Length: 436
Image (cartoon, rainbow, N blue to C red; front, side, top):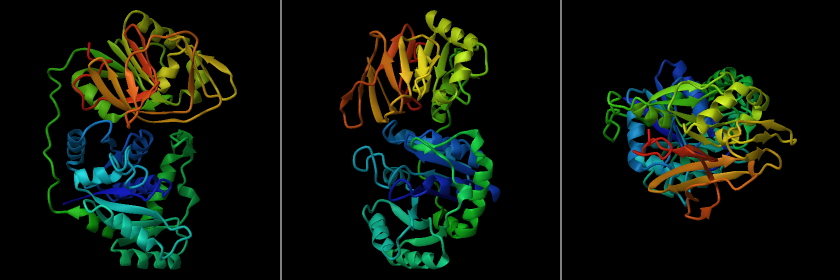
């Protein structure tokens, strides 16, 4: 028998990620094999999950992919796990449109029990109607328990515990505030700066949570003797895959990568890795994939690695296939400007600059059509692009609600660059690589 559940909350800021990370590490420290997942398009939380559980975390996203892919990915990756934990996104019912693609929608699709994380700040018995509403608003999900966060004393928790029982939701414990388990924020996600001493923070979170949450009761409420629904299909054989090689940029500056995308590439091509920060040239490859990340935090290192910049530009100039997204797109331009306006030369493939000056958030799902290819993704950045001349663009981009927007997909020979993080793990054809 195995435990499996979704962690959700009434709204963002309730502490889902910190609690998830603490639980992942606590169960791992108990000797259990733990498999993490994340609802939605977030690539930062999955990085933290992977580090906490020592097991790769995967995104379950009903907008960027489809129900069959989400089910297949979940059932395949959770096989053999003692505990499978899926961290939700935003509030329980918050989707791209009403509850479409929400945490609740994923919990319903996968028939997973829901454990709520609720802030107990400045609240007592009023928690009862809130919990009752979350439990009973939509009958196709099963809210089995609640953990109260930011609760300082056992006496305060007693009030909240009584409220939960009267609402028909099992109280599983409370978590007092603790500065030793705070992870610094960056934009809307959690910082992945190695200097944040992640290991110590997660171990502290696991220990803190273990004291205040009834882990045995949590497992009891989320363990089923019934096998997981769905049929596990074996991964496609790699014996007949293309002999082409795709080189993936992966280092401190470029690491916003959907693991399922890489797994998909590995089924069809040979995949290798390189560092635009540290290496001097690209590997022998037929295509390059330069994902998003934080290039703005490593401007001097990227700018001074002249050999790598020349190698990437030469690869593109000679017709090599390149796909770059967000931070990778910034890297392929003429310059990146920091918040103060200082300019750092980059690869120079495209005649634009990107700047961190006057930062403004661009955020949302994107629906992309390029010829006969359709693909979905997510846009999330604070920089903006300054074109110095008219640059060739391809495709049509719409929001999740079907509104056409002007997010560009730049093209130069066989090189594509865009702010959109695209998800192709479920697709037979992806425009950037299908000609290989």
